[in-house]
Length: 326
Image (cartoon, rainbow, N blue to C red):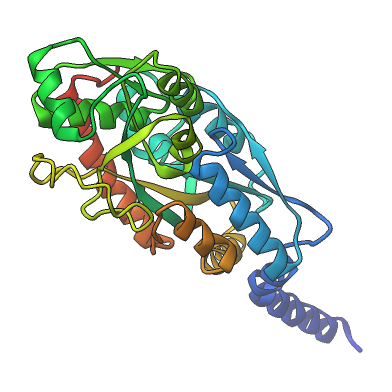
């Protein structure tokens, strides 16, 4: 075979390999011998953590991969985002987080060490949930109306605890909508806020059922939901709209992301893996047990949804006077 013919065949072979390389890479990922790390920026028992564990179990069963949960807790989720940013963009790190890191922190922090749009690639929505207005056992209020009436009669007397940027904002939004002056008491973690609520140190906390549930056995009471409809698990709990706050609705959401610069072929595989995992029995059981619903967005749809939420929550933070306060 002469040189020119060998060169031609070599060039053709290289071209064919190049054309197939994205598909070949996608088929090679994931390497089942390498664990996938799922970073959750909030503590055990929170919705992000519960969803991450259900998704990890589903991905393991569906794809034969080992998904390890890594709770990187602190600074309203900032520690978790930094861990994702520092990870190789090779597909073996997935970030399962809430709207706190994506659309609330950028408005409440004076300086944030990440850009949620530039540093994270949207994979898929994994769930959404309303919050519950929970009263502590030291209070006598049986309804949100009673709490609002007492707060109006006693400005600055009653406290609302929080453990994330979103729950703090929810408390501020509730107080503004109700026309009451309450004292905001932020904690490092939601479980700390709920523990103090159960212990009588604070009066109320707005948080989802996944976090609040264990404390209902300790005398904490859910008197209203921030959703547009009553929760299926607690149909006796009215909405805040029913309690007189017309149009009031706060919904928390959760989604999965990959580090920026993760190859497109790998992103496509991860997106498919997460999307299929959230349809598994493990995740749908979480929805049922914690009054959650699916968040059916993927890729560009999730990106568009997040950008709209970014603007909405930015306006809410400004209205509450919390812009750049952290």
